[in-house]
Length: 549
Ligand code: ADP
Ligand code: MG
Image (cartoon, rainbow, N blue to C red; front, side):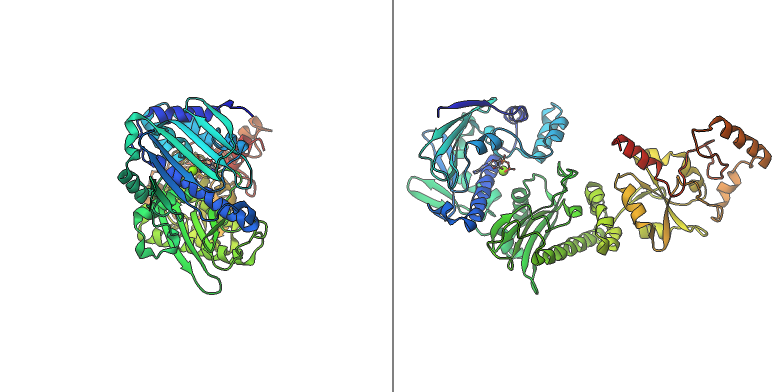
């Protein structure tokens, strides 16, 4: 087969253009990305070889080699991991398979500075090589296959693929460095970069110069070290690697469970919202290891969907090493780990909420809408999750807990009231609120689509019914009004006049509304729409219409 020329997917071409032409201040991260990929490739092969040892007939000792060649101006990053065949090369190094790509592309503005921040969050992975190289060559052979391939590109829209019969197992990425980037051939520079970003990589990263070899990293799995031996920077870099993320973790939870079952977990709550957090598959993203061997990043039973923002690793001592992904479904050990992990994460969130309310508020803005799914999905922990919830209300500019809102209930108030809508500012102007404001009754302002589901499912809190302010039979007559607001209230119209008006409106709006009623809920507005009690809320109706339901 001869050499074949192909075009990058449009999204890749666009991304490469931005990567190459923006002055990215932190070019050295290309090495972190390539080492991270090499480590992933070794993990994948180690797992595959558990069931098919012939895959590693040519050696089961994994390593990542950095080979600078000053004369040629090239740096090679070579691993003996799982490698890629022709189809893998086209799919992995010609397209972006990541979910959230479309969303990411739509948010690019053309303003280099803003776009770089966005790219920083999205991550460019392999393509970051083109920040320092004007040509990238990948020579690779997939484990278990006979022939290898050569992929090559100058990052300008096209790449070539050709057979490379003698390629060794794994992948070697050779960067032809731009003249301005020759510093990345320097051993001290390389050593410092590996120490900074890749020390946690569990496979040896070896600098090869002539016949000299030097291991640059600690090469022990970070989560197996004791907390006191790990610096915040190391945790952060590990988070970048394991989560394929580029922000700082908001919360780091490193713990060891000992007892009936034994496992170590190193979990992170990201500082910013991942692009795919509302992807319909609602997959969890924690990687499962068994005795330090990577098993899968798709262990569905490891964490519930409402904790899908959590990243990290869990390493089990009890599962068998040859556990298949299928065997993990309905596995009792996994179920126990899940229960322990959920408890741990929720209790750490609680601690944060108590110790640092301000910081917790930023977490809540980012992931509250996801966590709230747990209120009705995890019956056992409903109370714990409700206690972690924060709300916008009419009584404060900040966030309130449900307990605080209950504590501020008025004499004679027998329910907790809430309003649902698209945003807080619009809700605050809603005419339906007027009567509540006049009587000083606090109203929860709910703006996440999920609120339409958990509120009816929960029904009440501390014995107080949750009632929508748009429901027709809301009765505030028993609530004592503040004396000043009461004094400012205009005199009520005579009853007969109201009856005549209501009758005239009914006649006029016949067929358009179900009923017309006089109310003491309004102070400034003349009329407002309400829903029948027991019917779906007006906002939910609007949401469903928007989704053509
Ligand atoms: P990510 O690592 O987030 O998946 P990258 O852009 O870094 O994204 O890499 C894209 C894909 O290319 C990887 O998911 C992997 O399938 C493949 N790949 C990259 N480097 C290697 C390698 N050294 N060995 C085998 N496959 C690789
Ligand atoms: Mg990667």
